[in-house]
Length: 333
Image (cartoon, rainbow, N blue to C red; front, top):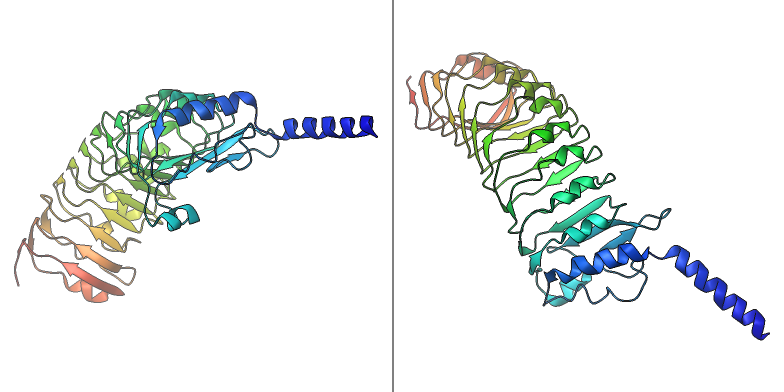
């Protein structure tokens, strides 16, 4: 009986070891945790023991390889831990490069902690299985990793509401699987890559409240899945590419608060766009007389420009025009 019990315990130990996270992954997580400070919620209290695949808050493992596949730490959550504390999270510290040792990592979410500083470790571009990077709502500084285009499986890149600076890496346009790009509310400067249209899978491009300059690339119109384009509150100049009005699924176009000049392309008036904001620019000429039954605008804001002439009669042909603002122009009639 004793030998049977010994063998049983030994087998259970072997099975447990096989199904627990690899020791290098556990060591990487502990090094990652050591660079962070969270005093109010105790989210790291569960990071104990040898099996980081079970019971460690925010950590999930690949069911086949048992390597760490997901880190999901969000400072604004409906998790009972947050509800019990009656507060959102606040965390300081930095994102340790030790995270790059998690070779099977697919999803990295360290979001809405408000106090995390430092740079985005450039070594994350060496993680071949990474699909999601969500670092929104921190105080990260420095540039986006220059070799980010190596992440061929990346579908979500959200680094909004940080203090990032530098140029948009030219390699970013190599992210052939990218669907969601959000870099709002940073200090990123320079021009948009002329080959931005290579991001053919992109459905949302949110780049507002930065310091981007130069022209809007014509190639954006090649992104046939793009539904939301927000370039507002930058320093963009030049004219609006008429091809934007020919995009099949573009529903929101926000160019508010730039230095855009030229005239309004007639194609925008009878496009699929239903939220159009061109306010606070230097757009001249007339409002195009090209509305028809395809025109359906929940919002059309053309205020604070240099438009002249009358509101065109064809606007009566539009299926719907909800909020229309043409104030602070030089219209007549």
